[in-house]
Length: 396
Image (cartoon, rainbow, N blue to C red):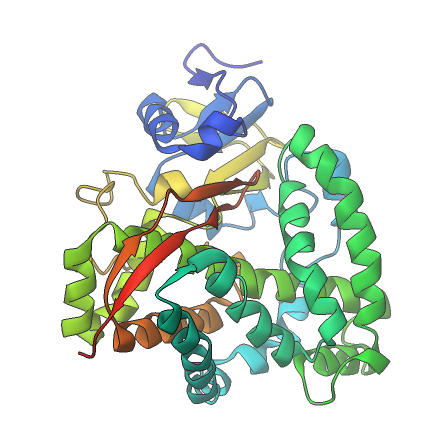
């Protein structure tokens, strides 16, 4: 039973119109209160920054076990995975690749990733016109991460389709989810076979996970789900951030000029891209006890959506939050989540995105839209399907 003081909304945050442009709806939800009940889905959402960040770092009251998506039956299928577990189980799973994802290990990859970015970008710039999403954003991270894992070439073609279908299943059982379920299940079986020990290149992340199972650190049944989670999570943020970032920069020629003049702005600009167009818009948690925000009490065992995309545009935290600013340096954004479930691949994502931006900045004086961008709709991921651009070459 909801209290008379409970803010309630009947908005469907998974509706096509909302997914195309969620920000007016986010504003309405933020104004309703720090926690809002969505009557259409019988769940709660946290739309403001302070509550989203605090809940992200509070796994004891906001659990990921059987709750990271909205649909209970689909949550049950994710049981025991790195996304759908809490400490101490979560720490064991995440620790398997912690050495590979540590800053020192990633620093050793920086030069190679930079070289690969230049090799991909150079011929695209030569063409003058290309599609940022299809020719660049979807190609580069898949290649880098697949090589790090040691995946065979045959598996790489399936990864993007699987990732899209997989993330759709974190939403309600709507038509988008229903279409994605058979795709995700079929591709999961195919990827499981392709990521067997015999099919993986020696020395990669994949081999490290299999060896963890040999040592008894994790169960054999956890190998493929863990590889799947790292594979998808290590690519998705990068793909969508590159696409969204170049869309934002193409509309702001003065921002592109500023980056060419001062490369020190590249790292904070990537953080601003993540704040402004958060690739993951929402993940869910389940309350383990009643949680009070002002006059609002979320009951125990309630499904709660952490609206990262809304939190990152909360005017209570950010000045002029709907404006993309190259000099903002938005320390503390939740574009990578926060706490124990913060994106494990965020260090790699930063290196990849900065490498792509640097390779373009070396060669491109001006970047302009060559046609209207086309958005790709997913229940929880925000990104573009196509972004045609024209570039004018010029050395700095």
